[in-house]
Image (cartoon, rainbow, N blue to C red; front, side, top):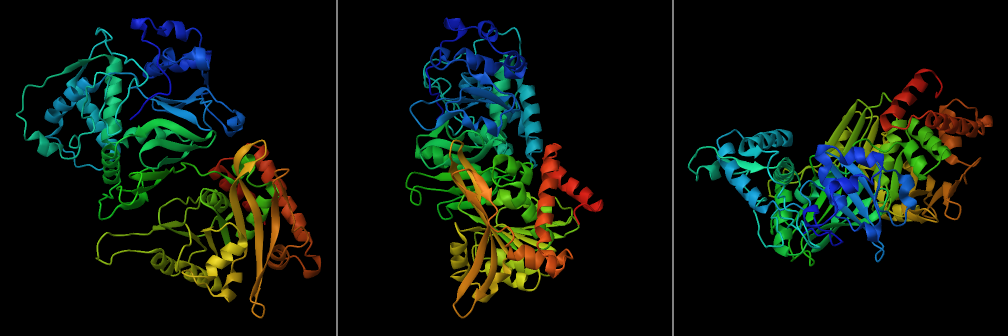
Length: 611
């Protein structure tokens, strides 16, 4: 169910603030925003806020990571498509509230939604609804809604703004519930799925229409598209590009990880197992991986590329079914943006530039949610532009700017047909495709052995890995089930150790704890030689170049490739500084975008400035 964390003030009809009164005290930017017809519901929401308690929310057309320092944010920002979000302060909890401002907020639509659905059955059932394209489905449903709805400006605004703390409360299964206890079935299956069959049970009658105000129509259209084609109550969360993760741990609230405001609690929660189970079943069907008690786990991708994991049923998840969504980034974060965030510095980025251009093997290692995939995506801009890249993943998360990119994904089936395609299978196939770089989403098992064989035969490999230190990484690599021979491990050249840390005075952030070089393996002592080249200092939140004038990789691998004589290898550090300055100048020129940076590096190479 969805409930607001405050008691809404009465509607204007019942003595509350009017739109005009509230509009007059808003900033010019907010006035321009809420003044648009599709955003009137946001103005209505502000009218009913307890501003005497929390104050007037600030409006930000766009938010940035520089706002992380705000301790108790009270602000509204747009997320697109007529939606906005209110970050509502909670002085009694470490987490603040994340309130999606949807067109249906405060409106009593249960009875009218049910009437609209009944009319839709007669309009849609005999049409071709076999398309799987979500946009086509939305267009079909929107046209059908226009046929059954009579939008009238002269109707009295009965919209009935609901009263009480749980105003606008509705079950997440899509059934809307008001204080009077009325309900509807807006999430009933069949409107777009088995609608053709359902329609046969009805006699075709003369087309009727239901009269609605423009605001009621916008709200009903939004709800129908959201629940029937979209991902239901999660839709506004998926539309917000500032959200990294969406988490439901069972009964109770849905939580999110926000790029700016860290961990937040939403106003969406599940109170009954029946509702939660129904919701996750519908989600699994929408992503084409139906979940059952026999096969209670789904790990797949949404249509936008976001990664979703679902665990179904109370027998395997004692708090009730749970799910986690890791949002997909539209445009990957660039290495220069990571420098802005403080994840690493220019010299470290220049070091990775030199390593990857020279075909060195690299792992990005760390704990869950430490930013490993983000880092691996970011450094792909340093790979030679003419390279053929082959990526191998369980769930597609990697993004590569190169045109010659082969993207391969594993396949799993739920029967005994033997048609599964594993990471191991794809990696073996990749070795026959003459790649210049093999990227592996994450090494977990026997595919790690093949990856090191690929390195042994001269195929550069990049991968993420779950280990918090180089020692732990080597232990996992050489132990079951990966079982890489110890004398193969030194084929791995560079290891980035990354973590989510509490930065003094700045809150949570992601930092590269160290960049390490694997030097070799001593068979007599059965020990590995490695050294940290860069190290993060948590006291000053800066990075130390601990390997300056003492880097094995720079002096013994990179310098010879750049034609630097053996007796002048120290010149390699001047080249490193030069590249760090180039990256800084690119950054100062405002070229930060992932693809823009890649194209700029190509132009610099063509001009002979990065040879």
